[in-house]
Image 1 (tube, rainbow, N blue to C red):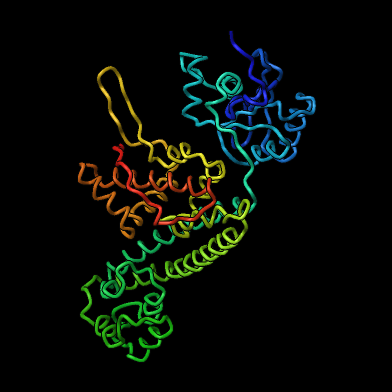
Image 2 (image 1 turned 180 degrees about the vertical axis):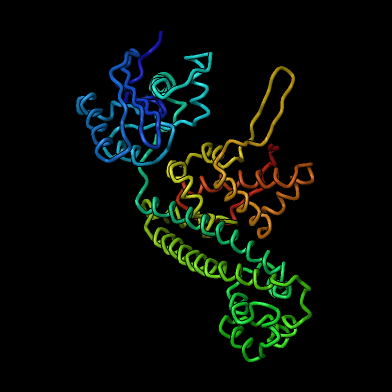
Length: 430
């Protein structure tokens, strides 16, 4: 005979779906959102089109509140975007919001129409019905702390500013290569402020012939440049110029005159943004963690290969899995978890392409730095290469190890301790 286990000794699994009464699908749009509400028996409770403005979104939240009889925790909302005004507004009102990848939604849509029909009303219905039947396929969203939201925006703004700066610097370099290659011998990327000041003094090779050693020395002193001396700079700039057609020098000079102010502004903004990110990380690192342990930011900063920028990227793109200590979600989102394709006797393991690109880059560079600067990870890299893995495969394997170590550190509230590293079997990865 069997026996009954007391409920307090047999808790429900943490990932068991909650018993929701209403299922809402929102087909997100830039101007309007299509909303469909189903009950537990798949009957349409209501649907409407909502404009993307504050008043309309507030009315949507009030309507869903009324449908749930004041119990927002009984409403499951499915949407394709993980953040935004509509997501944050519903989360603040207490509704349970779930996000799904558009590619997954496309597969769910095939269950309702094999002909490939698609429209906003159908997508909203598919979202609502899918979260009703396949809730584990969705990821429940939570509101991030205000400081993490700010960190996410600052880190992304820093990356955007860096891209714009490099793009403008490349254009500037092309103009110098066209007319003034002597300048590129001093700074090949043409992205340093002291070089810009030199170009301001001598915008063309003809102007460089009039430069004095004192003028060059003042520029070097102002920017604390010691790797090169003023006579060497002057000799480089006064070297024979390239023969160009009449008017070429004036045209290139005019183009550079427009690019230089843009470069200076972008450099100042990039520095200011970087300083704000650093200050915010210091504040987060100094905050007390759970119990007597260090904060999550301090723990991540102690990990080998992780610096200021990589820490900002990790918390900007993976704040929720870090808070939940979800190792598997971190592996998949960062792309270090391989994809296995098996059919019959055929089995192929390939690199995961569907992931967060910023998180992939953060983990790749963290693994690269750890391999270069830490003996343990260098040995792991050498072993993996000896087994036939390519450079990228080996670094993904190291990144996977770093994530496993990080999650263990977060769970135990401890910083990285190299003395606790033990030899582990090397696992073949895609």
